[in-house]
Length: 216
Image (cartoon, rainbow, N blue to C red):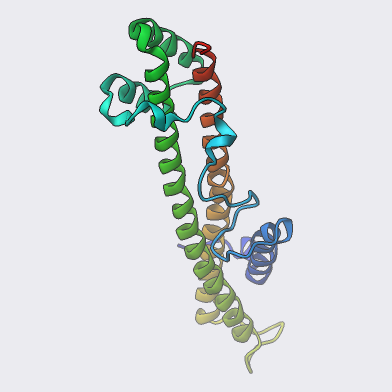
């Protein structure tokens, strides 16, 4: 793909991306894990105590053995279910459960917690894989920037010297890879918020479930 010469400025692009996009998260939060690129602190699992203050959900038995509880847990845990629909779903479930509502709600909570925690763990592993790919791309952009510098500093280089086909090709490749790097970095900023969003969802669902459990 041919890009306009005026839009390339390859060395500036490479320096800005590598110094700005890569170094900014590191400056915001020193991290011992080189595969974790997010400003948000890495917590591999949600702590149940952070999202639930009721009885131990395990005490109600396996949530997967209760078809009604499992069905509701999967629906509540899914981000496709808007939070403003949760109250109605829970109220209908409690009414249908009758005297068994507390035990079934505990199983719903157990399912919600396990499903969201598993999804969150998959996303965290995906972020780490994404970060490793981004680092490989950063290394390639750095190498391409060095190659462009060498091409421009060759024996025939000078203000009036025509740009060689090799130098043009190197500039275009550097500009293209830099653009991809930048787009991936912007996508990563959004993805990094997802584990936090899932933890917040688990908390909000836990509060709504607990509110419907009868005292005693």
